[in-house]
Image (cartoon, rainbow, N blue to C red):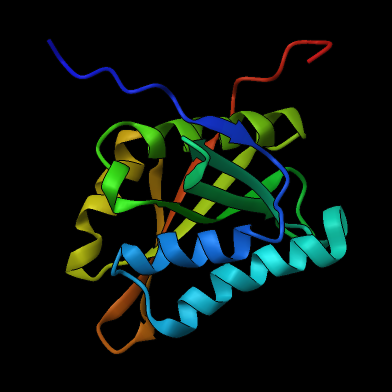
Length: 172
């Protein structure tokens, strides 16, 4: 019999403790530079300081009183209905159990509910990101663009896009 793992509980507002939790998760993935980790934490701090005016929205996944994953998204300035998914990260200790997919689906639903029509996700073409790019493709994202040598020589920016055709039901 397979070990049943409960779905994480989602929450949508960050707290002061979340800066450390996000740092822990992003560092544990071993994908990001110290500067990139600092940016992830800065978005939490910006949300805490400015609330909705920051343009950063969060879905945090908690399990047994501990944050195990999160997604950060926001509207793209000067567009109608386009959103960026800035970050999605899951603690390596719980990866492979569907937490990332559930976080992404929840963020997509919230974006659609807010009037979003498109979601854009940027990532690297470095070999370590092959599973990440596969995850986005498996979740229905299409390759929209590749910007050569964007992050560094030989490190292209890969942009994925998903059109949100499902609109929330009235009253949701």
